[in-house]
Length: 297
Image (cartoon, rainbow, N blue to C red; front, top):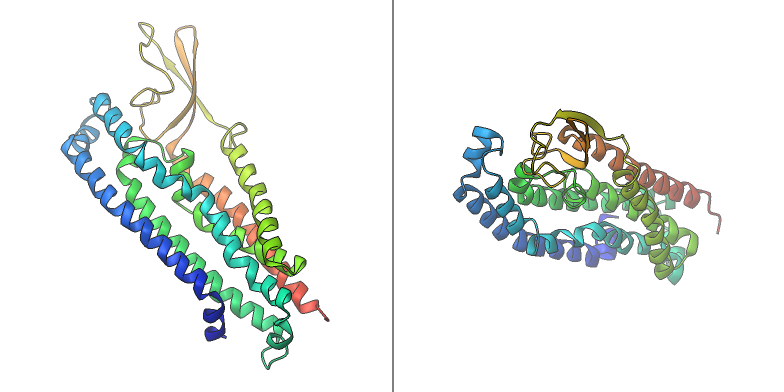
């Protein structure tokens, strides 16, 4: 079964390896340059001395240089990558067998079809987890200096760090596997799997955007002399902590009312998003195993 699984999925495995190598080739030199600039600008000493309050200009310059442009181009593909990679790997797993009729041979051997599917799912899922963990490790290292002066709760770093990338990849894979079994067509399963994957992705965008779950924290800050320069884009944030993600700042009498996501909420949001993706992945793969076990023709 290991040899058969490798033969059937080696093209996807090689593609994932090539994509990871391309990511590493871009991220590692750029990350080294980022760390060199971070040190040369004196940001480590400033953060240790004043928490960033003493060097807002240096922080702004660093973020403008590395948080936009080429740095953004490296991050943006990772938002859609889990959906595309998951369907490319998952849709053919059952869809190709049923489309080409090779199930007649594959499911009538000494290995029962349920064990055949569980074994393949275990091997392929393990490979996807390894790939997702490797991408997450590289991107977490790459974002390290930026994470010290900006918020990890912004959409781009939160999609590439923590649990989200790997969990999203497994969700797309599970949806594509189930679609392949139901539609008996590889291309149709890819389309259906990707559309289905967009649903939880959109839900999480809403929860992290207009809706915000859990609700944002609110604090009131005494404001003397009009609090010049205090706003959403203040450096450091008006909350005084560089990791906080400020959503809104309004004035009420002599106070600033600040709505923000605390930096400590990063893993809470990762567990919510990752948990949703993993629950869908487990449900779809479990359903596929049950349906294949019940199949009579």
